[in-house]
Amino acid sequence: MTVEGKLHVKNDTQQIKDTFKKREFVLEFADNPMYPQYILFQLIQDKCELLDQFEVGLMISVDFNLRGRAWNSPSGETKYFNSLDAWRVTPQQVNQPVGPAGPPPTPPAEAMDVTQMDEDDLPF
Image (cartoon, rainbow, N blue to C red; front, side, top):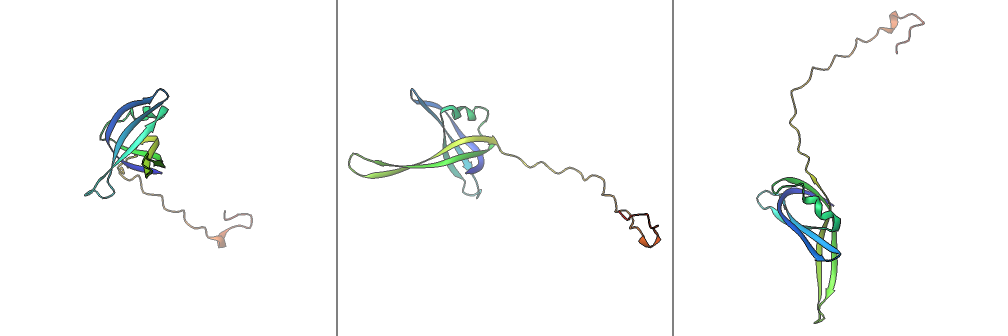
């Protein structure tokens, strides 16, 4: 899945265990500018460095996987958790303004009059 928006929050990398680290960030997704959505993503392991090159406020594109899992509490209650695991972060492509138009296209060549052609002349 892919989503585009503005980098709103960029957290530091957290070392959870000796062999596991993650980094969270928030994307401001504004499909309706009056009601922007703030979406929490996480980067894990070697992907944590993907955010280093981006500043808060920059428009980015995020490719991610939607993950879900169940957990049984000690009281026997089942709870469900979701995470958005980002695996690629790229700058959003901004449409370049259209420059002045080039020269007008050349008009098509005059149509050949096949009635005045020799037998050996081909019209193509």
